[in-house]
Image (cartoon, rainbow, N blue to C red; front, side, top):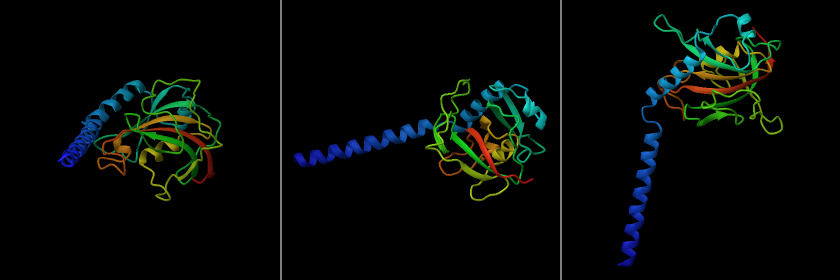
Length: 214
């Protein structure tokens, strides 16, 4: 009889644990589309009307300044797509990649709740929009390895239109905090462990350009 009670108690505990986990998971991503839109609106408010349209303008953006880039690839006749950026480290004299260039970057990708979903070092997250110099989180050249991307190619990694856009405005040696709305990221469907309608935040350092092709 005692053994039966013991088994029943274990079963009840297991059910309770599963129920709590499901509730926690549901709460974590509740109203995900709406929460992401609200977060995106808060970043847009910080950027104001600071639209950057030319390469000369991007050189004049100061460290700590928010600005806006248009993602012309994802823009349509009905709605323009924009990316919101904050320049953390400026290097206007560095090289700039082009559409066919291959680049090496340090990056850390997070969701609006600060949860990391990808990257090659532990950088700043979506929650760090108010950060200012001096910075405490840097890639370590002793332990962190850059990732190589060809901007116009699907291989070996698929680049979103957001990445294709902002990389062509960066200069080597620069570090940006970039907020990419879902239209310029993984869309309504999402990808892997990233839900649809997710605003993606990236802490990106453009380390070098391996192939500089137009």
